[in-house]
Amino acid sequence: MNKHIFSYLVLGGAALLVGACNDSESDLLKPKVYFESRENMLSMEDEAESITFDLTSRLSTMTSSQVDVSYAIADPSVVDEYNARYGTAYEMLDVSHIKLSSTTSSIPSGKLYADNVKLELSNLETVEEGKTFVVPVRVQSASVPTLPGTSIAYFFLSKPIKITKVGTFNSNYISIRFPAGTYFSSFTYETLIYINRLLNNNTIMGTEGIMLLRIGDAPGTPKDYLEIAGQQHYNATEGMKTGRWYHVALTYDQPSGRTVMYVNGTKWAESAWGIPGFDPNADVGFNIGMIPNFPWGTRPLYGYLSETRVWSVARTENQLKQNMLGVDPKSDGLALYYKLDGSETQEGGSIIDAAKGIGGTTNGIAIKTLDTPVAIN
Image (cartoon, rainbow, N blue to C red; front, side, top):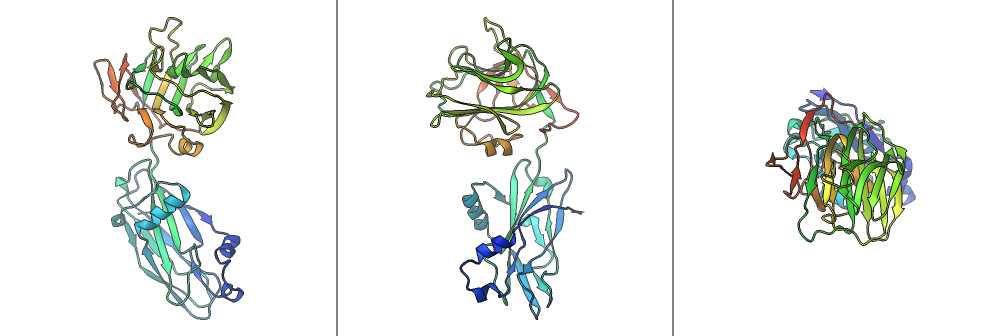
């Protein structure tokens, strides 16, 4: 059984005063029980089947007599309220995986902290990679009130996604024909990319002449600069290096006319456009990794791709940062999704995407097993 050190987001004294701002001066001096650490982030080891750690509450001021406290796993509605307040989508961990060594504890007279109770999370091998689960624990006492806003501690648990299989692109491609009538007003392109070598023009994805994300367009754009080309052009002003993984993204929010390039979740360049959107099937169509049979050159990418996605919405910076290594294929607005980890069916010159079951035409994507998982630095 493993015991883990985890970081605390500690509520400061100012927060305590805000929570009690409506109390009278005398009430402020009365002892109250609360969790000092309201939000606790847990990190799982690869093979861990369980995690245990010490749970404790405290008093705002000492008392001359013992204070008994009790703990309970809060109702799932508490998680729903948290998600609604902070715009998150956490799931409550299955209560069958949660165990308290005791539901009661005590704070001795003249002391501030309760005796520790063990909180154990088990069967962690069944926890899905990439999702964040939460365990809400409530504290209360029959002899003293709780401090408003601090009676529930949230324990966040996630199992990192490890990508060890990726798609190889050496003059390889996927050509997509979206359903008839597809039109992207707002949109997002994103992918994990590893560059082995750079040519003067390196296709990542998009519709040539309309909305294409690529690297370089020498001699006009340095061959290592990320560039958007089509109805308008602009590029980043910092080069990408070979031999390392990046997460790259392009977003366009039509209502605001704002388009942004992100690298590893950080804005690298932006521009203001006034276009209504685009048809991804226009011109020579939508391509990934190369533009096959293009009369002015196929412009192949030499390297690896993984988690290649197209959205019909402009993803936010936080969404990009939080979902670099994986998303739910059923996510709202996800129009195309190639994981490129060997899970997609390749048959008869077609490769089926994970989001909509679109069959992209391909000359074959070989899957490479990495010595070490993908890491974004």
